[in-house]
Length: 213
Image (cartoon, rainbow, N blue to C red; front, side, top):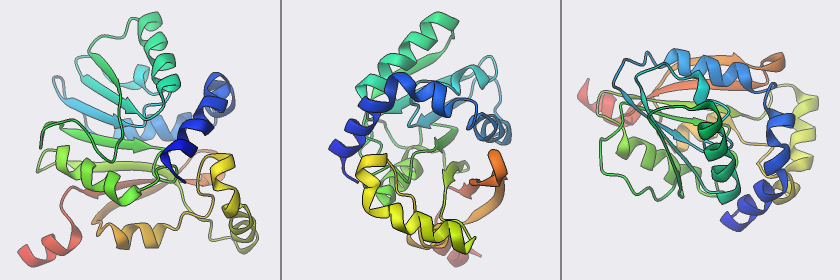
């Protein structure tokens, strides 16, 4: 995957995204937002906001900032915000691996269905940590490589087509956690057949928490 490949994929999918991925991914979006324990006045960053399908799920009185690499997706999200008259929502075209935000400026940071698409997922996680408040958690909803041997074989076979399909079918959970030094606080299967995973992780790297213990 590379930036041009991601943009090309979502340029193709944009107008059909809600139809194909709206209902099937809805449970994961709603569950992630419910797990955040969002309070009135909190500031939330959603990395990879897409067409803004999750935006109506946030509680009132919350400031939501959504970013996406795809200008087509941001345009669709802006249409949704205007149509639904959603207050306190800010949208921006931005690379999640190089965010234009100051340190520690969000109470909650979430990436839904993004990290297996990102060209450099480790840099995205680093940036999510940087902009999150020190006592905050990071939330991730993503497809990870299945434990089922048959599905794993299919995912591996599809891997060379990542640029075409727009995501990495064989994204490995254990490798992702290890490479990003994540301290996982909660894991939950979401969506149809539990094929996707919700992770709640400490903002602080696991190694740093061990040193402090």
